[in-house]
Amino acid sequence: MIKVSVVVPVYNAAAYLEECMNSLVQQTLRDIEIICVNDGSTDDSLELLKKYQTKDSRIKIISKTNTGYGHTVNVGLETAAGKYIGIVEPDDFIRKTMYERLYQIAEKLDLDMVKADFYQFHGEKNKKKLEYRHLSKNKSLYGKVWNPKENTDVFLLLMNTWTGIYKREFLNKHHIRHHESEGASFQDLGFWFQSFCFAKRVYFLNEPFYMYRSDNPKSSVHNREKVSAICREYEFMYSFLEQHPKLKKRYINIYSWKRFHDYQFALNRMGKEYRQEFVQRFRQDFIEAEKKGELSDAYFHRGDWRMLHQMMNTPQKFLSLFWWNNSWYKVRYYKEQYGTKETVVKVMKKLFGILPYGKKQGR
Image (cartoon, rainbow, N blue to C red):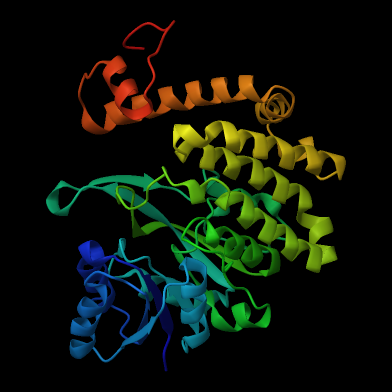
């Protein structure tokens, strides 16, 4: 019996693929299948996968033309035969006990899904710098079985699909799949949201297994197509709620809260040449949501609620303050990571193309 099917969507990932595949074939849970879906790679990815396949019969390769991340993962989901399904991105890797640990918990507690904390890292080999990332700052959410309908706090967790496993029967019953939009930006958000809307038994584990790469140079933010990608994903999620009126009534305010924070996340990662355009779209989407009665201050912190209305009323002022606050956050982060006393001016110019006028150097 296949206990866990692992779906690996591969597109031009040859530089990182060996580390990823090594971590999969070395899993202590042996009853797994590794479904590698090659999305029309033009580098050596397919050749590397074939080398691994000759050594391990658990590896299945599906090769197709390039259709984007969402469709590629869905092909793997449709092929999977395991009782549970996990997703690993090819530039990441996992600890060898990940699927054994998650499978044992999922079976013992009869879960729809179980998710764990993770590490975010950059650098190679012995020079990797790791940052522990908690799914939630709320420690009380860990170590218990939750029904999201009874405790909507679980919707406040970080949105990712790859730190856990999902019962295949649960995914198929509700036809939970990724948004098949073009490219590879944010398509996992809709999958995450659908999962939490339908799940009745979820569990969060405060142990890190997944290693998430944060320095892949191909993940460029200076890409015209990425400007509206987050908006298209939330349109997909809204369409899902429209098809399920009871879920929409229950979760529309949470949807709007998540949308507000994910739009900010996208803005924070976006190339400066696209920020003005995106903020106008940001504003228009939330003005429309307000007209429909889909915003509630019950789900927003007071500061976020003020920021939301500042964005709708004075978008230019919002953009200036938002980018200034996040720029200083990033400067502090970089100084902590590298342990140097680089002047703030130099870091600001390098990262953001701006100078910290009006602020004391070394803040």
